[in-house]
Image (cartoon, rainbow, N blue to C red; front, top):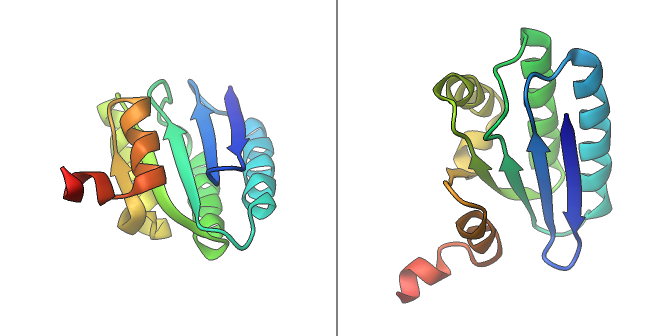
Length: 129
């Protein structure tokens, strides 16, 4: 299962990938995420990816995830805040991020609020503290 929500005001795409994602479902996810990304064209986009219940997936699913990450970078994604709990999922997601170039704009968080704050304010809060 997946969910995608767009916060147009803050230019943030919030997504959840839950459980084991089959290739057919990932195809729909990629189409919707690509459309959400294009809906924010011309702005610096943040992605809040809740992957806490995501399970490692088959190679074709990982490839689609890599491709949509590359698409995002090419179309304005500047920050990715990711929440992951499973070590196995984290290993797969690390590899996908390295292959797509997302690793350069990715940070991991343990909670929604910290992730969202970083997407909106970047490192400003840390510097002013």
